Length: 327
Image 1: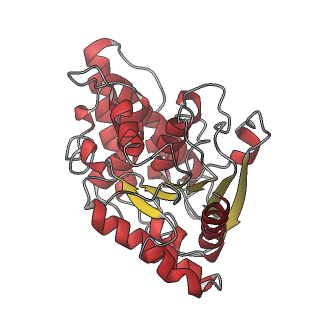
Image 2: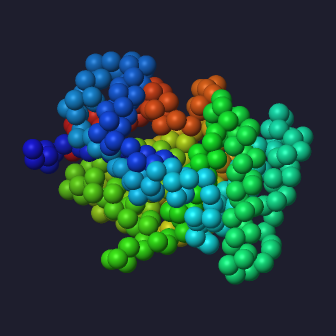
């Protein structure tokens, strides 16, 4: 069926993780947003979301490009390339520095020893890379044994922790070119571009690593974006995301009319540095506006949990309604 050329688009962009069913995910994300709409007092618009009456919804899926879990389908950092491995090390540094500031972990000797292991140094060349891989594996094992470090009530598996730190590394390392010369990060952005029609306005809702993917994609995207929404974004993570973003300087994309950033106060993925203060304005003066949400949840980083928030759903629906009326 041909898309309605006057109808806005609603595009969801996921974060880390392996292959998933895009159609199932799309249904789940729309339902979560509909729950948020009810909580926001917009129950009359629930069916407009779930049936695509208000906007043509799509789910930008790139998880299959990472394979099934971890970096190479397992819990061994030796599967990472040199640049990816260094970014993974920096991600662990950032994670442990934040954790060691928490009262419940401040005096934990195992975490302090793990943090000391991550200090740069050692041999260069292939042996040095192997040494870093062994160190990362050891620290990942320590982190995986502590419940709550990655925003969950349980301890994570080594593969899960490695996936959390390695997938941003693979994207930001800009390597692994395919037979056509397109690097891994380009192939990920291609998946989002495939969901976007520049002839129609798009509301883009991106979670976690997806916010990095979406920001870099929209920086060169020619179509109108009435609203860009980021949920649990690691964009301003100073040690390994912020310095590697492209293009530089990091500013609001010119085609974005508004940027709404939502962060849970307990979300371990969201850095202390706020998007509002870090990202520069576009030439039209548009810059991100960040809102803190306090869920008191044991799993504060989940995409569906963010989408169920009335603040998020209300912002998305206001943009879609305005675009449908005036577009």
